[in-house]
Length: 256
Image 1 (cartoon, one colour):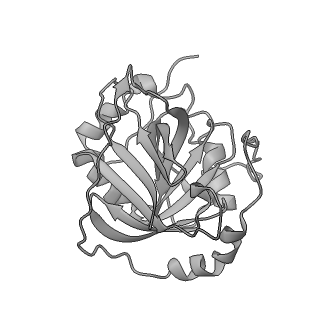
Image 2 (tube, one colour):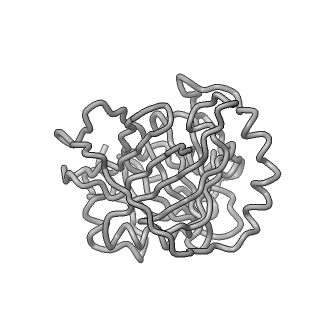
Image 3 (tube, helix red, strand yellow):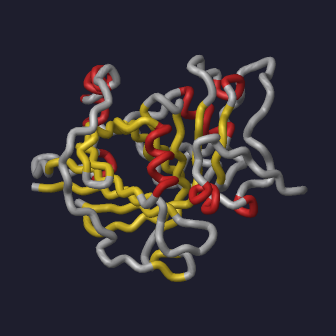
């Protein structure tokens, strides 16, 4: 089967287009014409999937209020580094390779979905208080570091990725909050539409996801997950061209 390239969003810079080179895209296009019936979700359960956490349920009401907040970017710098992590042959020593997808309407908050592979249901979905267009623009102009911080709660022994809400810093600037949520029907439609895609960027038309707000912008890439401790995990977006500097790094940290 011949390889088919995916369209890049108009605002992606040449630097960003470089890391998503044509030879790293999948063999079929995720964009399809409107079908007569709703798309069937055929994604599989991940190997370590569990039911929704109690903490996640408690914050569902807060999540609905959070979506009504304005997107703000107050100045607050924090130190962010790679902690000396080194890459060998485009692979981080001790890391676990996963699939990460950034998607959303360009002027709306960006969503991040993490999957074991493109055929599995997401193991994590985060809604971040950064617009999709702004994040992709920043990634096109240089390296982006996202730090998600929350306070330790000794009385509750939950995994770090089960924390329901995070304070969000983007390149040292406090940018609101990140909220974990259960995948919506629209999220699953996006993941199903991008099922054949292992890596790439482009637009998903309204017909493919039944989204009433217009086309969705997406970027998908491999991420390396590094568990530093029970209170710290890092996800590095891997560049297919072998460049040792990841375009995007996401740090989850519990402090206090």
